[in-house]
Length: 185
Image (cartoon, helix red, strand yellow):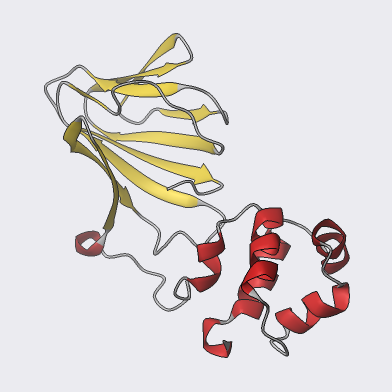
């Protein structure tokens, strides 16, 4: 399992959460010695141990098995990954602007064609979101039941668990760049 760099990933996820080995050990029931051995890649953890660790760190288990994030840090404009489309409006989509989702923050761009909404209904997610309207005339952002009209160049912060939806009532495509912490796509 050395080629997966599980130990390095564990250490990266743990330190990103600001946890010491002893704190993680107390929370998971895995000894500090065993966690240290995993981080130094002296032992391979069981899937069950990884599942317990992932749950405590608040990350999905699959993140331990993703390709290394450091291989290519640049995302070329013609090689962005589409990470989501809206079922009701296939023209509304989200592109990942970071190389992958293994970091502590997710950087995305949402494209909303004229006369479309980001989602049929408002939705919320665990993470905090900061958005910047990069392109278009204006867009309405409805957070809880309050409407905010953003113009090109405006930015907004959306608190975690806030129901929201974007509405483009104009004849121009809207592009919004946003960062989410923790990543949720």
